[in-house]
Amino acid sequence: MKEPSRIGDRSTSDVVVRLRTHEGRDDWLYCHSFILIEKSKYFGDRLSENWPTCQILDSRNCVEVYCEESDFDHHVNFLRLLYVVIDGSMEDIWHGVKNALGILRVAVELGCPQIVNACVNYLEAMPWEEAEEDEILKIIPGMGPKAQPILARVQPVNPSAVLRIFLSAIKFATSSPPSPMNDLKTTAQEQLEYMLTEDDDAPLLTADQEVKFEVKECVKGLFTRFNNMLEALLCEPVESANEKGKMQSFQSYLSDLSWACQILNKLEIMKEFVNSWVGASDKIVLVVEQASSVAEIIETKSKVIEVAAKVLEAIGYGNVILPTAKRFHMVKVWLPFVRVTKPLIDSATTNAKDAPELKIDGELWQSLESTFVSMVLTLPSEDQAEILTEWLGNEHIHYPDFTEAFEVWCYRSKVAKRRLADILGNHGMANSTL
Image (cartoon, rainbow, N blue to C red; front, side):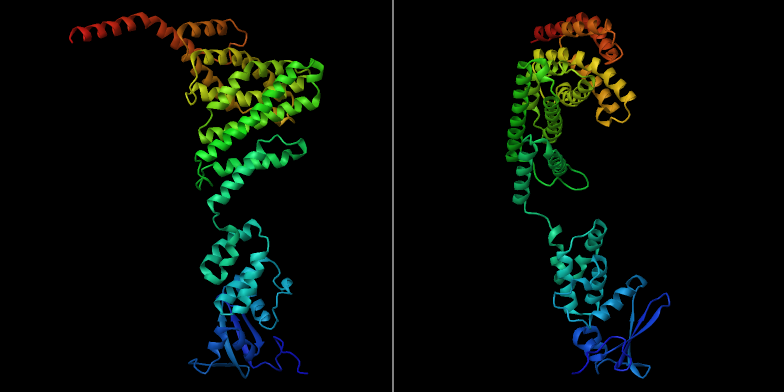
């Protein structure tokens, strides 16, 4: 039985492949022309009688191949693979994605369909690291249709498939699953927000009426469960309501509602949520105030502040239009809550540096202050006077700082009669000329 040919076997070889780099590297690999010609179009052409010149090295035909230094080992591995029977049962010959990608480049360049197909099958099936994926996206698109199966996992998805996964995710993210599934819920929430965010790329799906309707329905269900819990906590004895598990569930609802606000804001459908929060505000404050432990109070209040700030901002800047009575009520409920909560949280975060969940961004407090000023200035003058009078006599006068609102109220009040008289006078003169 004839022994199979081996690369590097000088005694049986009839051709030298001379691998060279521009940096001066020069290696000779003793090969067999019948293998090179059978498996590689490049070598088949170079060793054919039609090739105009033929170099001789060590009494053998010589084929020079120039390559980059970074691709040198890939060329060597390619030549070795020409001597291997590649039948799909030897995946370990590739030694990883990066190496297989380098061999694929050489196989395409030197025209070896067998190795190209084997590399494509391997790379299509293997998991990729982030750096490997980036490299694949740089290289594969220029390799022609044979290499395209590798890119199947990174192709744009049909919009209907995107919509299906979005709807499934929003239902799960707002379903208030048991606490062991909190990490999964958080992942779903993060990815939903990412899908809707416009950054360097457009949002993953279009927020049409179907999407908005489903989101509103899911958030409505979430708020209904939250409201039911409020009712239950208010009906129970204080000791029972303060059980650790119940307050943790309450805080979990608040976290979910805070996230829901961000989604509703992106889709510009905050109105129903705002109205629900307005209706529940008194109950929310009552439940929070009856918490027993100091740590529990602070953590719960910080989560309440996060949601309340988003709702008040939507009202204060006119994104959601509410009648005067409701705007005044929101100021009367949340202004005392916020002014007492801020020093409490500030003190807790100063004394407990290992409690990042209690920290509230300074920008949020600043934004909340601006929101209150904006809301107060939309109210009738008499209501403004009531709020400012209470502010001037309050021990927490430094926050929120209503100096701007006070100055605007003083100016408006002082010039009000003259302004109205001028307006009425001008209106009367206009009528008399008709």
